[in-house]
Length: 225
Image: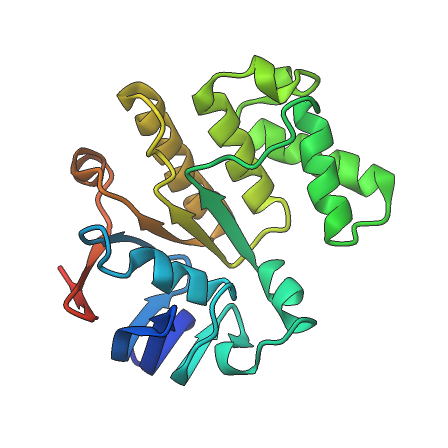
C-alpha cells in the first residue's frame, strides 16, 4: 500500500493480552475509506487486535497508527481524543434502554463535548435520516427491534464522522434479514462518509453478498485472503 493514505498501519507489532502474546511482528494496514473483514476461529486474536486498535489494550511493541494517533503513545488524555476519530460497533448494543433514540445520540455528542444544543440536534437528525430511523426519533430503545437498535449503535458510531469504524460481530445477535440490512447500511455509510470499516465476523454468507478484502487471524499472524 505504498503511497496510499493509510487510516491504520501496524508494523512489527507485538500484541498481547493477559500476559499471553497473541501477535508477534505483525504487519497490517488499511487504506482510507477501505472496507475489510477480519475472520478467524475463536481465540485467534480478532477481539484482542480490535481492543488494541481502540486503546483498550496497549500496543506492547512495534509501530502502530490509527486515525492519525500513535498507538505507542496513548495515555488517559489521548485515548478519548483518539476515540472521537474511531466509531465502535459491538455485538452488545450498550444503549440506555429507557431513553429515546434521540436522547441516546444526543448524550453521545455531549460526551465528546458538542456544547451547542442546536448543533447537536441538527447532527442527530442528519444521522437518523442517514440510518433510516428519523421516524423512531422519540421512541424508547426498548420499543425497537434488535435490528433497529443496532442501527442506533451505527448511528452513534458515525456521529462525529470518524475516519474508521471498528465493528466486532455487529450482526451476531440478529436474524438473517436484519443482518443483511445492517451490512447494507455499513456499506452505505462507508461510501457516503468515506469512512474505513473493519468488521470482525463469522458470517460467511454476508461476506459473499457484500464483498470486501478479507483478512484471517491464524497462528499469531494476519493473512490477506
